[in-house]
Image (tube, rainbow, N blue to C red; front, side, top):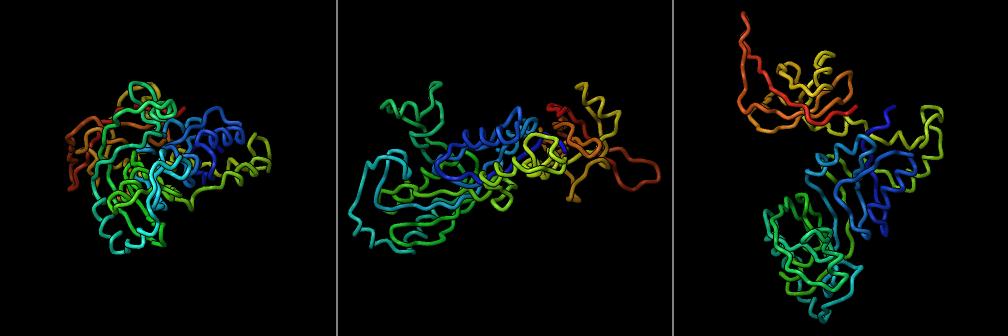
Length: 334
């Protein structure tokens, strides 16, 4: 069993993403552990971690859309835009009686699609090399620029005054705290995000995740290797590198090609070597498309398609064209 891969943890509340990483690292006795998009301490749910060489995959796992269930609390706004902050604005709760389910449905429709939002002051975004939350804690206010994010879907799950429960699917970089405050403003009331649960990150859902406490307990049990490795049965939860990027186009290579990859040489491969569930393989028309190179059933490297136009070779007595792809490996897994 490999000691490199990806782990899906269900992060508990009141724990930073960094602390969750440290607990996993200790349980596995791993050399390297990193994570994709940060979850705030109060938030729960899917936290994708790279283990050892799996950390090399983090940039490619973090570019996918994410899904959340959040509860917006109407009536108060906090300086952090969530339940952990100090209240900075409050309204008469009796006024919230005027808000109907129809009002909420009408408002959230305006927040679907590409929108602009201003990240909270208490966030990890850097301004002049300093993270915003550090400036906020020092009492320094800066003008945070709005940025575009994509709200793929926004569904009303429940409205029990003064709480609005929403299911959100969005692009990376979206701040659900800001979304909660903005929805409140659109309804005419101060608001903040009371709870947040990440239910999916790319292809990894909450059903794939392991509770952090359960994972730590597995570390004390013997795994399939009869207890010969530190971390015990917890390693059985680690997804192999190849499976972790299952949605990536896959190219099977032979030993000679693998040697070229290890030496940093480019490859020219046939369409027949591409493993895909799709019958319409159009990789060559996408500049900088990333594919995975597999040798001996294991992920050997990631490669970039460097030719924008496909090169076709017609073999004698064959009616089908064979597509050649020019690939440049750029990340090798030793």
